[in-house]
Length: 56
Image 1 (cartoon, rainbow, N blue to C red):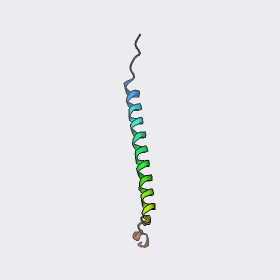
Image 2: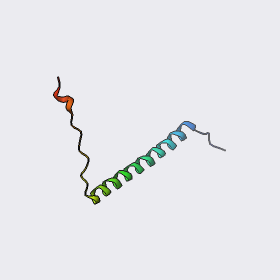
Image 3: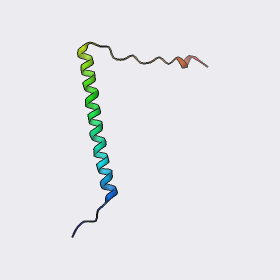
C-alpha cells in the first residue's frame, strides 16, 4: 500500500535543507574573506560613527 503524500511537510523540509545549505555557504565565504583579510594584513572595516546620537 502506498503512503499518503504530505506535500506541505515535504516542501518545508526541502526549503529547510536549502536554507541550511545557503547558510553554510555564506559562513564559509565569510571565513574565507576573514582569512584573506588577515593574510593581506588589512585592518578590519571600521564601524560607522553614529552622528545622530549627539543631536536632540
